[in-house]
Image (cartoon, rainbow, N blue to C red; front, side):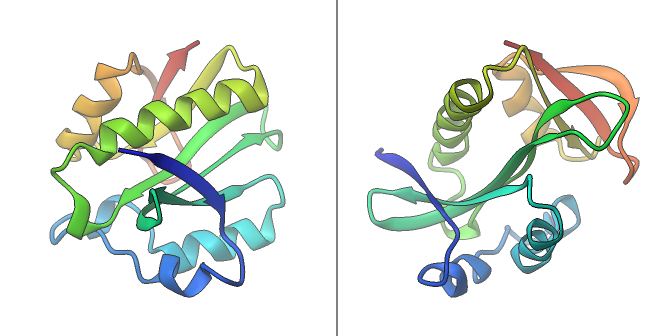
Length: 148
């Protein structure tokens, strides 16, 4: 696998907006269009298209969120298109994303949130060292943290 990230732009936007999760996962992550609208409202968000070489396989969005009591680095969205799930892309993508966040922000902690029903994602995040911290986010998702 040759995982790469490219900022969502006018050239790849339509293809990125066409990415979909697998049936039954729709409630776990907002549609890409909604994510991009949010990124347009808050300049800290970094929406990226995820490629394996030249093949678009997913989408991610992250930022250093400063508009809260605590400044935090958030891995807010990670979506592997339904056509590419079950092929190891989630693990490969998360590994590269964590490298990117550490390099970009030099962070000590990385946060994300997940619905408790999303067992597959929870197992993946736990494999990389994320642990629940007892918090809920604004959407009532459970917060997980990775200490870098």
